[in-house]
Image (cartoon, rainbow, N blue to C red; front, side):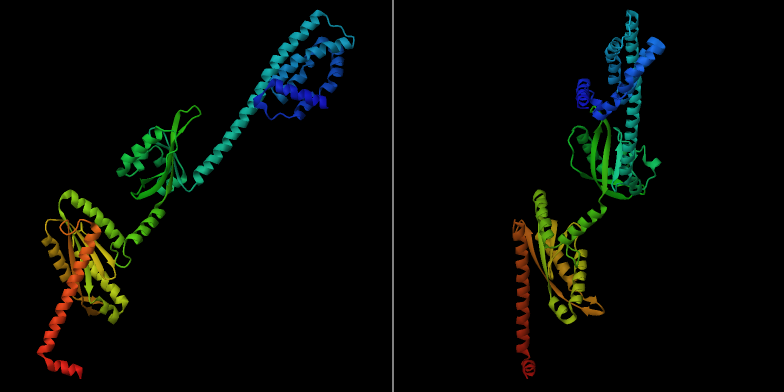
Length: 443
């Protein structure tokens, strides 16, 4: 048994059939089993039918060819010539030259026939296995293709849609027959055509994986759908381009969350105005624009007068409603190109661009202060406050944005202090003119 195993391994290496790597020694042993009965049966057949038994003797080669492959079967047909010849000599049978020639011809023909029979059998079996594997792969691919939560598009080299999965049909609102055959450009937002062409060129001209990017699709009903795209050019086994593949993930929810987070980080939660951080960012950009235009820019720093009494007398809820109304009045009093922000508490900042003189900024400030001083109706109560506004002009007062805002802040507080001192002085004069009022209050 060990000898047979070693012979089988030697022949396996000799044949060097890569396509049959799955051979096992036991298959060789099964293929050699007919030899146990081979010679006795052959001898009986030869004595009965004569040289036709040589053809019957080649039957094991077909068995080997089907079991092990066409090459081993054909080789066996030729290798059996030697044991055939010596077997007949051993048992005393005589083979003349004519019989030996018949044996050789029979082996040659049967070896060739064995090769084609076995080769056809294995070719058919191989094709059947490949077809089954291909069908299974296609089923797996289609299952993955249709069940993924992302949109998947298969595009030809002219960017026509040749296939799309169910998720793409659902999100875009198309039926399959409506979408297939359309150009990919037909479902992309027109304002992104330029970027689309650049992406296509980049995908075509490189074999490297490109980073994901965002793309806006237009649905059948005209809605905009923001998606994250992972696209690439698919080539065949020879490296020739076959089609484009675009995997698209709907990121509208994520974009909405990002927008909400950005809004919270840059806007005042109560009034919806810019907060201090965004105010400074916009201010620096405005300064750069003004530098190029050779015009002027003004920063208005507004602080409410008497707002603390609203909170003390009516509560913080009334104070919040007051701040909302203040923001509305300030927004109505400036241009859409100007910038309004709540800097904190009852302080507001305004950036006025494209000015020619300080008087323009002063005029806007006077109108805003007058508007803020008008009475407010809040929850059935009539309330009144005042406002102080400091103005700083670029580039006349300062050329640095931070210093420009600080200068406006200081001017506002100076104005508020002077106004308070003036009211105190007026109150003192009034008290001196009517001393009996003072006496009555003291008593």
